[in-house]
Every structure is written in structure tokens, then in C-alpha cells.
Length: 140
Image (tube, rainbow, N blue to C red; front, side, top):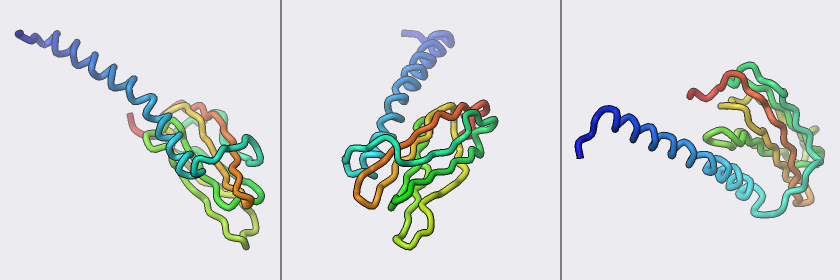
């Protein structure tokens, strides 16, 4: 079969579109895998943790995020729509004055930011916020 430029463009576009849609479940799977690794498969309870993130981020390169959870041993931050969802993990010792952390994260597009806290009693708490990004911060 002889391929024309038009045939190659159509074929390439179809392959690109299929690859793009195939990556969407992979991001959700990466987020779920990161949460499962952090929790050891234990169930997560909604609430008991405060997550502060802007509703709209003008620029996805530096989005301020703060999280606090009284009684937390560790808090993990995830950006569910990024190629690598795990953003940061804050660990607290027994002498920590407060159980809070803040950072600036990079977001590729509008997505959910999720915080999972491991509490002193071994339970896990969850909070989430959707951040609308007008200009993506991860290139492409």
C-alpha cells in the first residue's frame, strides 16, 4: 500500500488521539496507587484535615497550598491531574508544635488537590479542593 502525506497525517492523528485518551485513566491510577501506598490499603475518612488552596490560579507554575491536621503524624499532598501526582509529604515528630505545612506547587491544568493525613491513632483523613488553572504550569 502506498502512503500519501494525507494518509500519514490521518493515521498519526488517530494514534495521537488514542494515546491521549489512554493516558487519562493512568493518571487516576497513579493517584490511587500513591494513596494506597501511603495508607497501606486502609480506608480513608473524609474530614478532620484542613486544606487551603485557591479556587482559581492565574498561573499553574506557583500555586500556594497549605494543609493542617491536629494529631497528624504525616500529611501527603497530591495533584491528581499532574503526570506525577505526589507533590509533597510532611512528617511530624512527637514534639512538633503544630501539624501543618505549606508550599507552592505546580499544576498542569485544572484539577483536584488532595491531602491525606495519617493520624496518631492509625486512621487516615482526607480533604480535597478543585483548583481552576488558567495557564498550565507543567509545559504542554
